[in-house]
Image (cartoon, rainbow, N blue to C red):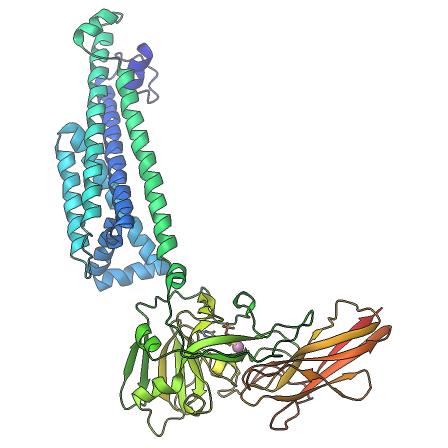
Length: 560
Ligand SMILES: Nc1nc2c(c(=O)[nH]1)N[C@H]1C(S)=C(S)[C@@H](COP(=O)(O)O)O[C@H]1N2
Ligand SMILES: [Mo]
């Protein structure tokens, strides 16, 4: 009893017995204490409000989230100078700063509502109802508000008001019993249970527990529901989820892989590179998030008519499947910055034709959402014999996010940096003497056809082979032309022709192999390819800059 009374009147470091000194200061401290608890009940109620609204929004109408609606509303009304100031002070954290500021405002307002409900009910509940009405207005006035968008703020404010009313009631009960007990204690007469029963007051400890239990349950549920809804929302509204749910129409044609196109040799690169193993090269710090629903492709520049396509427009042009080996200019001799996929897409020439490119144009500058650009000769995109495409799928699934979702360009025979723009948004018809692409001022050629090359996959340098029959195998590529033959030389012996896999097409690499009677010791294995135009792979070594490496790969093989 004594113990309870002292707690209720605040322990704030006052060593003096309760009634002895400075009664005014003591009562001020007490008032502050009760008001803090009232403020707490307001904050908890606001938490319940927001969490309940987020849960309902998640289930019935995502755009009904009061947090998002009010946040967007504030972003819309903030004047330009304030935005600039925020960007100057907070940099890229300006939106986080805005949300933080908004959160602080909600905290203060809900604390005030809590105090009001405690001091002058039902003022706090009315204030919360007002906040509900305001957020409801923010929700339903947003452009494109859906049919049930009003439900989340309504349910949220109802839940918040109920919790606030209950908490304030318990707090007042506790306050009442504490004051009554205080009076009894203050009379310096040992409290008598009989007297208390007469006054009809339960122990303050009971009311206190009632308040904290309810506040605790409400706060914990708000936290769990709020954080849970946020996590589920983030996980399911992410571009990854949109990609997963995306259904592409059936293609008009698919790639036919002829018999013998894929050799079954351990250690040999597969004909088609699984998406998960496909090399990735780009300048993007974080993978761009592009929603196909809002994606647009603009064809402009030197055109008869500017054209804008949606994802559905593009896909409705009809999809076909193409087998193309993509290669990076940074691929060193023997390197692995290349891969082959079956791409589903639309010919770039069909898209360009809609815009009627001007006769003087000789280049298309393709641009990504993140600002990357590539310069591709117009002829490489419009030539009837070339399968330059805007691709939407890779090996049977929508483009992986890191490979350009939802749309990228793929051009057979050109290095990726001058053709394979991922997350593409614009095709600007222009001239090489008028525009430069991303890598051009950085030491790479404006035009860069892929160089004919070949690679040894097995045996490997780091794995000794046993003497006897050994298979030497690898891949060779000469996109748009095709490989005619591959030759292998062991030490200083004569060149021997390797056996090739059955080619899928000229744009796809071929696999090759040669059986070799390996003898103990170390041996040099060298490979070179010749394309169907009769060009022999260049022997002389060249670095990757400015337009791709050259040289014959020579590998040291240990036989023991
Ligand atoms: N938006 C964008 N697209 C890009 C690049 C880039 O940096 N940004 N890099 C290009 C380069 S250099 C290559 S080799 C290919 C690689 O494609 P991948 O990552 O799908 O293998 O993408 C090309 N497209
Ligand atoms: Mo590249």
